[in-house]
Length: 368
Ligand code: FAD
Image (cartoon, rainbow, N blue to C red; front, side, top):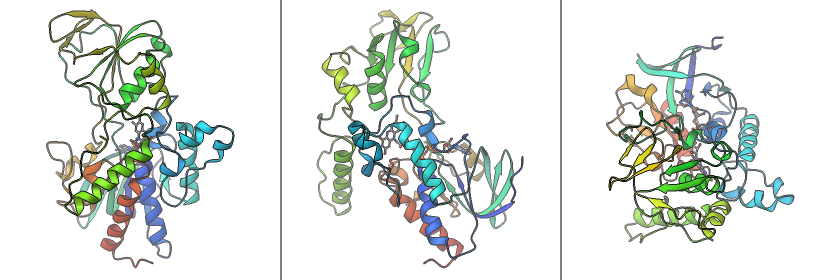
């Protein structure tokens, strides 16, 4: 079924947290105008990447540190379940996003996949699998989850076991009793290893020994430390060595596994894969049934290729969040390169506000 319109003032590509935060600020500023905005998201329902995370996933910060602008992630579950207040479950986030879209009446069209954005006179043409829409401004908020990165390890095709990326991991159950290698020393690797190692014979291939944050450091402390560093850098002071944002947070499952010694079986990066397992850099071989790649993601920006704005690193040169080469295009939520802490729930609001203001100014709609 086609879309019921062919023109919009603003087209937002994506329907995850970054898109919703932009939507909140656009809705606020545009409510007294007749501006038209549409969001296109290729998923079946609200939630963005949170729809695809593993079953047990909990946030590493309490509700008030895990909220989008305007409307706090409800803490009501906290009364019955103290853990839910301290570390909301991913299902809580999904419910919150659905409520958020409804509360601010954000017109998110689903499922609509944007295949390309092209220049079309004084407009940008947003091509989708349900028809084209000409827009005066485009905001890309497509996240990274749809572009998992797997390192180019020789022999990957020859491996006879199971390979999955962390983005496709749901629970440890299918791996019970098997020999599992978790690759990647970040938070995803640690959390997946923590549960897989409870039911399987699991080891951990890492480039450097993982750094665990102190047990009392959660997302709140990390965000404060990163904010202090941001301000110090801005004012030219020595920011010191902060907690690394890539360091492993000791969420309860990770702490328990660590204390039980289940995160200690460290290996170097794989040299190559064979039909039956892995070969280590020193030439020794080991049988493995399953490899879980916890090796990250890259920005999902393929649809911008016709604009010629994507650089070799797969990014777009921006000033704040606005493309330098195509000033009718903004990018929100992809990481620090599109705004400080913009890939977090609590951090994306700032980038979203700046973006909405610029978009509206560029359209010359009066703001409140
Ligand atoms: P997404 O959520 O990916 O939303 C983008 C949407 O656009 C998706 O629905 C996608 O399918 C869609 N899309 C992509 N391409 C197209 C296209 N061409 N056309 C149409 N639609 C498209 N952050 C925190 O603040 N706290 C946490 O505790 C936390 N824990 C995390 C745990 C894990 C395991 C991971 C992976 C991330 C975590 N994050 C956390 C980070 C962050 O919250 C997520 O990465 C977040 O989903 C990013 O939001 P986004 O809106 O930028 O992208």
